[in-house]
Picture 1: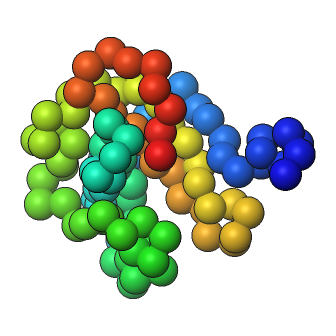
Picture 2 (picture 1 turned 45 degrees about the horizontal axis):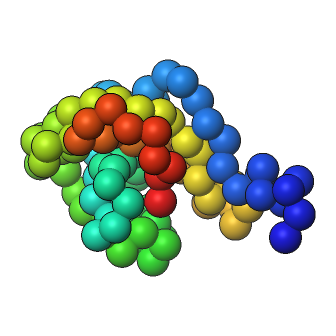
Length: 104
């Protein structure tokens, strides 16, 4: 895989996308077993099964800020994943502590 290919895997943004979700989207979150981050996204409920295939830890949120609820209060970055497979999704990543580790 070339560096050019690696660069298209995700797009990074400095501004959060998903603090609130506009109807008809709803808040979903994921805390991978390994990686040290929590991710939040706004997803159409009908699209959830598609994203769940690629993110097994993806769950529907019961609150507006599930990452904070699970001990990940620090906003880190926003990335767009899935563009290369035609299923783009913006994800806000949160950390437990101020860290420079990469999202999973």
